[in-house]
Image (tube, rainbow, N blue to C red; front, side, top):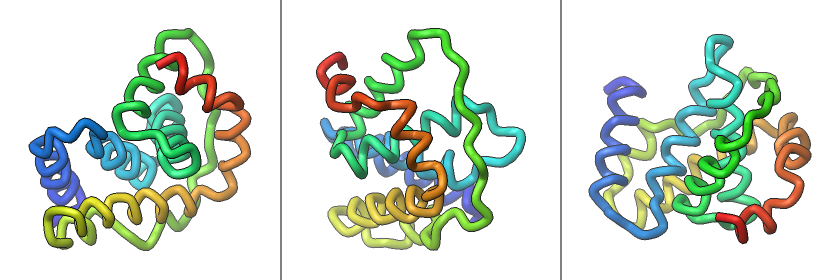
Length: 141
Protein backbone atom coordinates (compact mmCIF):
# COMPACT_ATOMS: atom_id res chain seq x y z
CA UNK A 1 0.00 0.00 0.00
CA UNK A 2 1.35 3.44 -0.90
CA UNK A 3 1.38 6.39 1.49
CA UNK A 4 -1.32 8.06 -0.63
CA UNK A 5 -3.50 4.95 -0.41
CA UNK A 6 -3.00 4.82 3.36
CA UNK A 7 -3.88 8.53 3.59
CA UNK A 8 -7.06 8.04 1.56
CA UNK A 9 -8.08 5.13 3.79
CA UNK A 10 -7.45 7.25 6.88
CA UNK A 11 -9.53 10.04 5.38
CA UNK A 12 -12.39 7.65 4.73
CA UNK A 13 -12.08 6.26 8.27
CA UNK A 14 -12.08 9.67 9.95
CA UNK A 15 -14.87 11.11 7.82
CA UNK A 16 -17.13 8.11 8.49
CA UNK A 17 -16.65 8.61 12.24
CA UNK A 18 -18.71 11.77 12.11
CA UNK A 19 -17.18 12.74 15.44
CA UNK A 20 -17.80 16.25 16.76
CA UNK A 21 -14.08 16.68 17.46
CA UNK A 22 -13.40 16.15 13.72
CA UNK A 23 -10.18 14.12 14.03
CA UNK A 24 -10.04 14.17 10.22
CA UNK A 25 -8.44 17.63 10.34
CA UNK A 26 -5.44 16.22 12.19
CA UNK A 27 -4.95 13.57 9.50
CA UNK A 28 -5.01 16.24 6.80
CA UNK A 29 -2.49 18.43 8.63
CA UNK A 30 -0.08 15.61 9.51
CA UNK A 31 -0.08 14.27 5.96
CA UNK A 32 0.35 17.72 4.40
CA UNK A 33 3.33 18.61 6.60
CA UNK A 34 4.94 15.19 6.26
CA UNK A 35 4.68 15.17 2.47
CA UNK A 36 5.44 18.82 1.71
CA UNK A 37 8.12 19.56 -0.84
CA UNK A 38 9.51 22.58 -2.67
CA UNK A 39 6.37 22.73 -4.86
CA UNK A 40 4.00 22.90 -1.87
CA UNK A 41 2.25 26.25 -1.62
CA UNK A 42 3.28 28.23 1.47
CA UNK A 43 -0.32 28.45 2.71
CA UNK A 44 -0.69 24.64 2.68
CA UNK A 45 2.38 24.01 4.82
CA UNK A 46 1.58 26.98 7.06
CA UNK A 47 -1.93 25.67 7.70
CA UNK A 48 -0.61 22.15 8.35
CA UNK A 49 1.94 23.35 10.90
CA UNK A 50 -0.50 25.80 12.48
CA UNK A 51 -3.02 22.97 12.77
CA UNK A 52 -0.50 20.65 14.41
CA UNK A 53 0.57 23.41 16.81
CA UNK A 54 -2.99 24.28 17.79
CA UNK A 55 -3.88 20.62 18.28
CA UNK A 56 -0.81 19.49 20.19
CA UNK A 57 0.18 22.55 22.17
CA UNK A 58 -3.13 24.38 22.58
CA UNK A 59 -5.46 21.35 22.70
CA UNK A 60 -7.68 22.52 19.83
CA UNK A 61 -10.05 19.90 18.48
CA UNK A 62 -10.00 19.20 14.78
CA UNK A 63 -13.18 21.27 14.40
CA UNK A 64 -11.53 24.21 16.18
CA UNK A 65 -8.45 23.88 13.98
CA UNK A 66 -10.68 23.86 10.90
CA UNK A 67 -12.41 27.04 12.07
CA UNK A 68 -9.05 28.65 12.85
CA UNK A 69 -7.92 27.87 9.30
CA UNK A 70 -11.10 29.49 7.95
CA UNK A 71 -10.57 32.56 10.14
CA UNK A 72 -6.92 32.90 9.07
CA UNK A 73 -7.75 32.38 5.38
CA UNK A 74 -10.29 35.21 5.46
CA UNK A 75 -7.51 37.80 5.74
CA UNK A 76 -5.11 38.48 2.89
CA UNK A 77 -1.58 37.92 4.09
CA UNK A 78 1.73 36.55 3.02
CA UNK A 79 2.47 33.14 4.46
CA UNK A 80 5.80 32.33 6.02
CA UNK A 81 8.16 29.92 4.33
CA UNK A 82 9.09 27.02 6.57
CA UNK A 83 12.26 24.99 6.08
CA UNK A 84 11.58 21.38 5.16
CA UNK A 85 13.35 19.01 7.53
CA UNK A 86 15.05 15.97 6.08
CA UNK A 87 13.30 13.68 8.57
CA UNK A 88 9.53 14.21 8.78
CA UNK A 89 8.78 11.88 11.68
CA UNK A 90 9.04 8.18 12.35
CA UNK A 91 5.32 7.44 11.99
CA UNK A 92 3.64 7.43 8.59
CA UNK A 93 0.08 7.12 7.33
CA UNK A 94 0.79 3.42 6.64
CA UNK A 95 1.63 2.88 10.31
CA UNK A 96 -1.57 4.56 11.45
CA UNK A 97 -3.88 2.69 9.06
CA UNK A 98 -2.27 -0.58 10.18
CA UNK A 99 -3.49 0.14 13.72
CA UNK A 100 -6.77 -1.42 14.87
CA UNK A 101 -9.71 0.93 14.16
CA UNK A 102 -11.26 2.68 17.12
CA UNK A 103 -9.53 4.22 20.11
CA UNK A 104 -6.15 2.68 19.21
CA UNK A 105 -6.16 4.15 15.70
CA UNK A 106 -7.39 7.48 17.03
CA UNK A 107 -4.46 7.49 19.49
CA UNK A 108 -2.11 6.56 16.63
CA UNK A 109 -3.35 9.61 14.69
CA UNK A 110 -2.43 11.79 17.66
CA UNK A 111 1.01 10.11 17.90
CA UNK A 112 1.53 10.64 14.16
CA UNK A 113 0.71 14.33 14.55
CA UNK A 114 3.23 14.60 17.40
CA UNK A 115 5.88 12.79 15.36
CA UNK A 116 5.46 15.19 12.43
CA UNK A 117 5.26 18.30 14.64
CA UNK A 118 8.45 17.27 16.48
CA UNK A 119 10.22 16.76 13.15
CA UNK A 120 9.58 20.44 12.38
CA UNK A 121 11.16 21.54 15.68
CA UNK A 122 13.18 24.28 13.97
CA UNK A 123 9.91 25.90 12.82
CA UNK A 124 8.10 25.88 16.16
CA UNK A 125 9.01 29.45 17.09
CA UNK A 126 8.07 30.75 13.64
CA UNK A 127 4.63 29.09 13.93
CA UNK A 128 4.15 30.44 17.46
CA UNK A 129 5.19 33.94 16.35
CA UNK A 130 2.71 33.76 13.48
CA UNK A 131 -0.12 32.73 15.86
CA UNK A 132 0.88 34.65 19.00
CA UNK A 133 -2.62 34.70 20.52
CA UNK A 134 -3.95 31.19 19.96
CA UNK A 135 -6.19 31.48 23.02
CA UNK A 136 -7.78 34.63 21.59
CA UNK A 137 -8.09 32.88 18.22
CA UNK A 138 -10.10 30.14 19.94
CA UNK A 139 -12.64 32.73 21.17
CA UNK A 140 -13.08 34.13 17.64
CA UNK A 141 -13.95 30.82 16.03
